[in-house]
Image: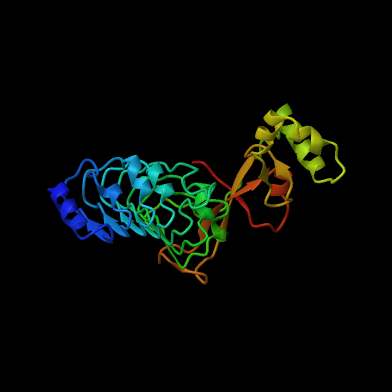
Amino acid sequence: MAERLLLRARRGGRGTRSVSLRGMQLQRVPRGLASLPGLRALSLRDNELRCLPVELGGLSRLTELNLGNNIFEEVPEQLKYLSSLQKLHLFGNKITTISPTIFVPEEIGYMTNLRMLCLSRNQIGVLPDGLCKLRKLRILDVAGNKIQIFPVAMEDLMLMELYCEDNPLLQKQPVSAIQEEEVWSLKEIAARFIFSQLTKEDSILHTAVKQNLEACNILSKKQECAQCGQGFLNIWLECVRFVNVRQKMKISRNVHLLPVRTLLCSYKCFNHPGHGFFGIAVP
């Protein structure tokens, strides 16, 4: 049945703009979709899909894709090649994790035109930092997941609408806690020293690091302290700051403060007065 519908769409010419295969209990994407290069909108919602064919990434003009109410367990990697995509619906699936590279524009394209992303009613616990590289994203719907905290660069997104109700978001309820003694590994101590020296233009470490590929790889994982701005290697102290975004965008009614992940390099920075960062209490 799906193949016959697709054939009818193709008779309209290679300029077919829209195809809907909604609610047909499909377990795989029909052959031939990838041969519609002019396709702009595709609906595969309400089926039994758990993966997409590699060929689907060739739909270079696709601007809207609806994969809602299927059984995807992760965001399909093929989607990142749809450079013209503006609207992506993945609501009502079984997504638990998102690849950290799916939204990172390492090459020209990589979903940088995405304006609306709907991931509601899944089982997502963590949103990747790469999500914040979608500079054109205006609507984000992650309601009904398992999200506690949003990525560090969340405020870089120019969102107009954010829906995040029915998530176990961290709440601003300060409690006292005993601080553990700071113990850094030798690797961490060396990395922090190198980061401090690389800020100096005449440091001989600039040349030494460039000639050592292993060192470059390790130092590329640099984090930056939100308080002092110094670089460090590992996530040493994960904190949260609560941001009031109601004046900037339309947001779920029951969300008053948005918990945003923050990284600090030491308890010295954590104990600095007036910064507004909170440690995360684990029950």
